[in-house]
Image (cartoon, rainbow, N blue to C red; front, side, top):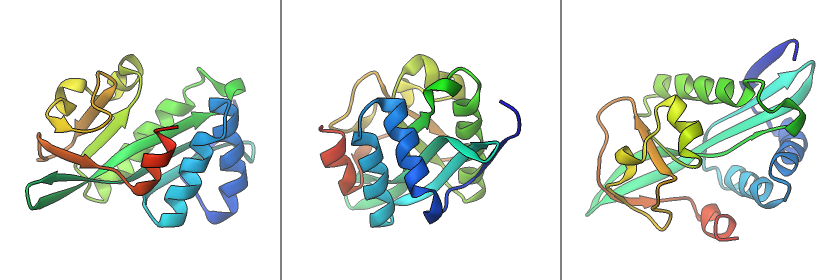
Length: 169
């Protein structure tokens, strides 16, 4: 890895993002999720990592709602995070997460949810204990949350429509 840069994703990046997602996950489902979230306008922060002009990593944070009775609270869901397999264990995933968090905080976001490996995402402050009070069809030890400011601790997580078809696959 030489000149790694992280920047906001653009519409020109769609095909390269699709390839990174497919290579990282070995299937097209996550790439389809990214396409559906982007097409529906559900993205909040979307970043790519470039190495010598080649996109080698991608992260997307989409809008999720926490509903508690009639009240709704805006939060984000980190999904997916992908790095080209030949660049695994080079710190690109962590760099994307950290930069995403900086941009989310600057935008006034206060709560992020992720469904993933607790050992990995725990390094960035995500915990299942923080997410345990949320009702979700994805509720399990891998459902984790991180807050930067006052945010609800209970309620029902409502994901964008794209997740119902992609995560169920």
